[in-house]
Image (cartoon, rainbow, N blue to C red):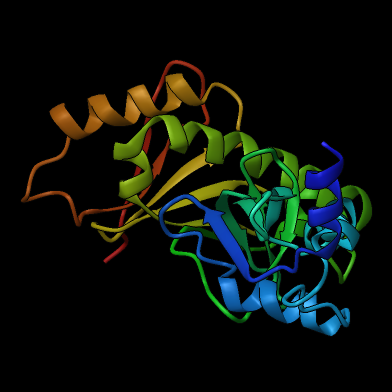
Length: 239
């Protein structure tokens, strides 16, 4: 034991192994980014004594990166450093009128938009302030909390219903303070109102698609309104 301990004191780090676990489409961080963070902290790790490498500090440093969910760092007896990183999974992107916006992740937390990589997720835009009932010019405070909370509810619904996620091109907050779904196909909008009773609302939409829409009349409507309990209201386009 004394011999091994004495040998480890002289052992130098000769390799850094970085593993990044991420969901498909969430490539916000790569190995070069991690190495740049280590270098910017004045610590390349290579050629350093294994005995003086502080894995706890490495974890704290990398955990500060916006896309990182969790990180584990450790050293091996043969002089290698292992850094295992799990990234946050984003569900949708929020784009206010006055900024680049942010993501909402699978835990319902806000994650800043990163120019390095844009995830292909559903985008939410529009008049957030009418939805919140305020006239603020920035998406902050109580307004942001309500928007993030309700969009998270909708995003979680989509994550469990792949068909409706694929159906949705965009989430839009209209000037009447309602949530609209802009479909990928069809020249109309689906008016949800709020995020209450989503299962019931999309069951009605599914029924309407199967029994009420045909290739001949699909472009006749401007709005399919689901916000009313127990009924679907359709507005025809004004010609």
